[in-house]
Image (cartoon, rainbow, N blue to C red; front, side, top):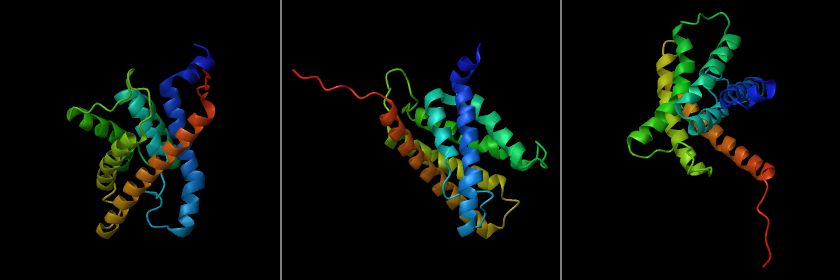
Length: 195
């Protein structure tokens, strides 16, 4: 396998996209957000693009997307919090967050609505992805609030849940807008044929 083939691997792409959006978040969005709202900024955000990567990668790859998501999330966690042990309770956060999209897609699948991308469904249905992503955001918000409950007071838990719900959903929405605009710019348009 050469270097180009390595970077064509969908799990490597998922790993890199997740890592890059997290880097964007912590080096650009989070410091800007901290200027105006420093309440729980280290735990949650009003705009969180990595959720878009989670939802899109699970949509395209199914539960196997975890092959790229989990290592990326744990690497980011290790880089951000090197003083924490891998088995601390808050190190469950990557597992909860990465699994949120899988749980949402599987929940719809159990209801006989298979919303994963397949060979017959090639179009990007942004409304469907936004719905599944919002459900995934609920799972993420509830799960991560549970993980972090020992670190924050009861009154802050509602703020934390709200920031997770809004940040994930807004990050997904804007991420989908960016993906659609990039695809329209990159992909060739069908040519108009004259008869």
